[in-house]
Length: 214
Image 1 (tube, helix red, strand yellow):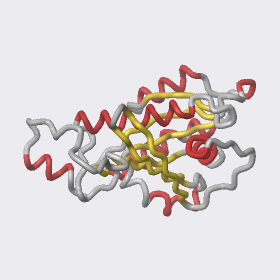
Image 2 (spheres, rainbow, N blue to C red):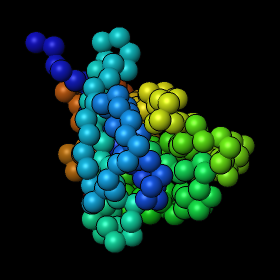
Image 3 (spheres, helix red, strand yellow):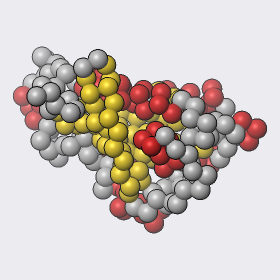
Image 4 (cartoon, rainbow, N blue to C red):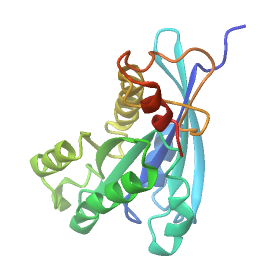
């Protein structure tokens, strides 16, 4: 019997409070936009199934984290088992853009020796008249973090599906290249069958052990 999904990727939503993490997820997973969304308390969960390419189904498990400082000890515990991180900032809020490096550093430091594939997202692109962050500046930040960049709007659905597709594909490519190396000690990626590619042939047994150590 054909499995319902071939891979499961865990993705964590990151960014300051009110940048629109929950709104973006609701638009993507439920196809709805709510003008008023209650602030996330701790962590919320969402699931979406996608066909990455013909015959390749991926289950996306999203962890929607609270942006407030008082919940940081709770949300940090979810970083370690994430394969992907969607870094959001509000295009109309300069401070949220300046917080991106802090979010990125916090996750990167926490997950070592594992890695997380990031996507930088400038949200609320429908509010063009209130924009406070330029595209080129955001693209430079994304490049410095080794991530792709996209601008989205949960309100008008602009680039919403594209953003999640970009991150899902980037995670899959990281698996193929060996940048991500799933193992029993890490739940960022699960597979119902063989992984897309083995670790590079030149990788020693000791290096493989380190990749799967906690």
